[in-house]
Image (cartoon, rainbow, N blue to C red; front, side):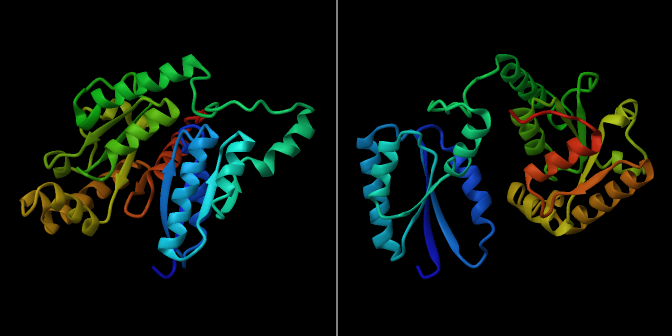
Length: 273
């Protein structure tokens, strides 16, 4: 267990905020292995005491002091968690006092504000975008008039998860088109896509990684053979170059990074919340 540190994301709500901030912080420390646990809806002292006991057990098991990244609003709940002996990091503490001074307003300690439905129009836009992504997945629909963007790539290059992320987080109507063997026989866009070239963004991937992904889906098939993957990726990249379509490799790129790059390149400005 040497070199492994237990980390708990504890919240009186979903825990998404604590986990998102905590993960960003932990990625800066590459020589330590982290075992993480998100504990949501810790909204009473009794529940906090149960969690504190669990944290103390982790300290014994791993032989090191756990880290708690905490977004609980109630001070009594935070105090009960602190009895665990863990390193306590309050994600809001460094910012609240300077903001209160600047705004001349005390914060309202409301649970779940960050991920509640604060704006119904924005919420419905995200839901509608999600439905759009599902009905326009893998070329199911040929009507792209209402699409904000269209991701183009060979099969299993990351189109679908990126479209879902764009819909859920930004309310972007993202469609995707899988390049078939017939499409890849030419270095020009498929006829179905040509009217929408200003909405297109190409994704590519290292053939070795693509072969690994396809092997998990269809083991020992022609679809998963390395030569097939290599040929398809090369043909797709040639098409993107010939048509001057902006591209990004998904091999070592997170969905968050892919989405940000796509939106920036295509000039789509949407707030995450």
